Image (tube, rainbow, N blue to C red; front, side, top):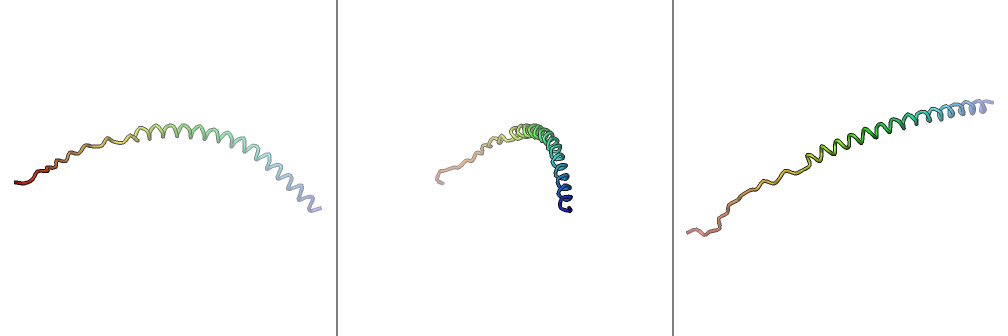
Length: 72
């Protein structure tokens, strides 16, 4: 009899867990969609910022004068 009572108790717990998981999954799905939209907005802003600063500075022209004449 102890086994049957434990099994019933376990079934009840697992049933409650399934119902709880179902509610949590709906809530998690809602939060996941919110997180995805926030991440897309953040990603877009970071791409805009990084592309504005990713242009390399133009190289400065250095002028070196070398004289290749023989001395007198």
